[in-house]
Image 1 (cartoon, rainbow, N blue to C red):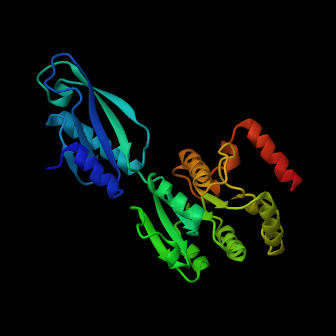
Image 2: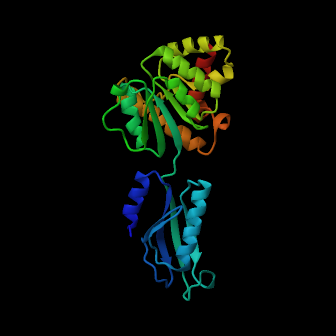
Image 3: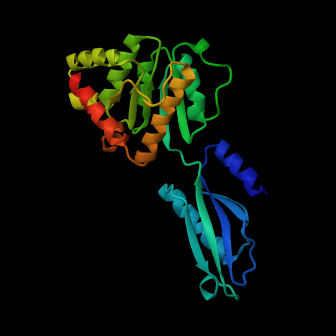
Amino acid sequence: MYNWIDALADLQNRGEPCVLVTIIEELGSTPRNAGSKMVVSASQTFDTIGGGHLEYKAMQIAREMLASGKQDTHLERFSLGASLGQCCGGATVLLFEPMGQVQAQIAVFGAGHVGRALVPLLASLPCRVRWIDSREDEFPEQIPHGVRKIVSEEPVDEIDDLPAGSYCIVMTHNHQLDLELTAAILKRNDFAYFGLIGSKTKRVKFEHRLRERGFDTSVVQRMRCPMGIGEVKGKLPVEIAISIAGEIIATYNANFGQQSSSAEPIAKLLPASRRSQAARQAASN
């Protein structure tokens, strides 16, 4: 039988959500040890907090959290007595911590310098990543765990297979391919986030070409270009990657459980001063 540490590591490596349950405090004459832990997945339980009806109730609560996708850590106090089938008095306080819930399905188009810096960062987050490029030799030999490498001669075709509410990041080696990917992503318009690497000038050019193709302005405005957190400065691939990853985290923390057009625009996640600046920039474009 796994102890809780090994079980937690194994479940997280496999991307299987679980809840870590910890005895935080013992009040009164109770037979349990503060600090005891167990891990509860949808189908298994690892280690123990002392057994009995309290452990059974903790398993129920943990599995309800998993079924609902609840991400909030919370404390729960259990009075020990007839209600829990205990013969003694006192109480036990349990901490429930959700672990490993997938927050975002991410598609990264492009295995260039920034893509190679970004994907390992995304793989270390509670995300599942599709990494797509037509050039197999651009991918590193070792692909991070949780990342699916897709070599496709027609990367645009891969958009049809993305689940609704995906996070789409376009950073290929070819501007025309970037445009075709952008058009296909905006045509679906069911993404939680769409970022296009490039400058403000690139955005203006793309907006013009997309309007020529009949795209509504409100749909085009959902595109993040330039993407990333503006406060993270620098031109090195890893600096750009950190900026983009930060924006992804901000978005999924605000929007987890939402999909497509119901997701808040990234502009609403910015401080008020940044929103005003963004609005002025959009008006000037």
